[in-house]
Image (cartoon, rainbow, N blue to C red; front, side, top):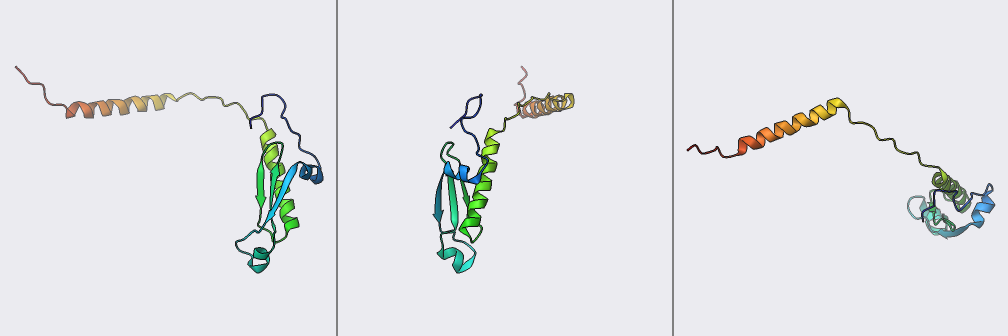
Length: 123
């Protein structure tokens, strides 16, 4: 989903509750290291921001509450990154020394190919 050049079609709420209201929250087993406690409880949290479709996952903590806070912080950072205006790239000139080096390399290559040819028959 691409935004147009004007203002973005979403606003980031100040409060976590407001941001959670715009999200679908999924919980699942985190798996991985952490032992029996992590492997038997649904501590991983996946947040899907419905207006933009941005998805973040937090599963490194053993507590679902802590993972929700981590996921909210990640989502907020990612949404702010989407709101940031990208700076226009200013193309740089190719330095004179680089142009000279390229031309020398081309001449060397041409010379190698020239030496590969069969000699012209005289006659």
